Image 1 (cartoon, rainbow, N blue to C red):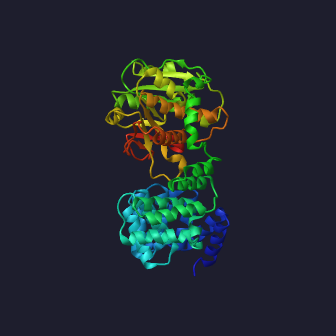
Image 2: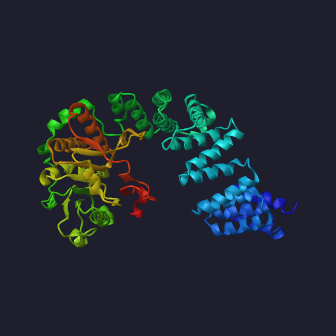
Image 3: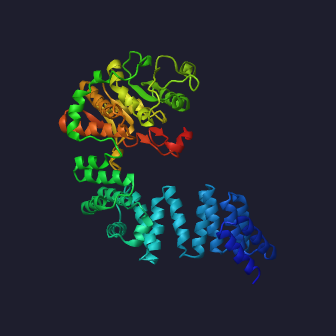
Length: 506
């Protein structure tokens, strides 16, 4: 057979990472047989791995022209196109491969992943169910179907067949099925958490409780495991045990200590905070959007953040608080010049070099101060946010309120039960106490040099729990579910917020 020995040697070089040698031998095979489908496909795989996507596509085009029903060429074309972000053509390539071989499960898995990425969960579920009908004992098919169904369950009721598949996945995880554990790797607790939420949504109480028990009993292998296991303890009604479990990775206090903290750390006790320069918002009845960040963050996001709110929300003012001001990085008087006119103000504060967790929670430490000074509703937001529509309209629809939080009832991490990206408080006695308890919680750990990430989210959540238990007369409301959105590809939320590497999107 033409080039067989060369092809075998090329594959060996390829597998050993000797790519120049592999490319040379693949090319020699193609000199002898220009339409050799295996050589074309493998050389395309090699070129694609080096980022030479167009070369890879050209090789595959040659192969498919000669062998239009070669499922591996079609499948590889789908991989290359998907890697380039050309999802529509990638899906078409996978679909053609499946049309050639209806049992081509690798193509079904890749197509299903693309469908899920584009939020076509129904289509993904149909593919995985088709796989499972042909391979009823396939853990891989069940695992992928289970993952898709946990998303689908938040959209609609599951059919009996779909619910059966979800229960099967849960049972295998709880029984520590070796093949299923290999698929979830070290994320057993995460998948049980997602299943628990699905069963909760579907009102399948027995399966929900089984998942919670399984989570608590599972080995703890990661920090995320701790946070999910703590959430499970909270979900079964054992808050103190939950907080004690997660205390090594999150700032936690027993709920009964919150009242004493509130009384001990009133606004006067926060006088040790650094001096504020600049000016607080001008007298007005408008609510104030309040954000705080270091000078480098303000230089990146401050103007865009403030401009979007001033443009979309005519009834709101904006105040930015700059930590560690540095004129070599950002000169507020110059950069904010176009935002002047009474609706925009700014202050500065030098906190020195601290853990970034301190910067992240700083606006909540200053919240009681600005609330008491302005006597206006204060809306705390992340500075890496953009207002897509009128925030003021939504806030006014919630009046009267003492506090408004953004709840996350479907979160499986105890530190994510509320979002720190939004909090609104009114200048009522209760609103001031609520904001003061949050500030006192954060200050309790910061003053000891023990601050950790998510302390602001824990503070808001714990304050809400404490007031609901001990002062239920307060008007604590929840923001609408579409208020915040962390999906950079969508602006369906009233406020879009970018995190991590997505920040460049703003």
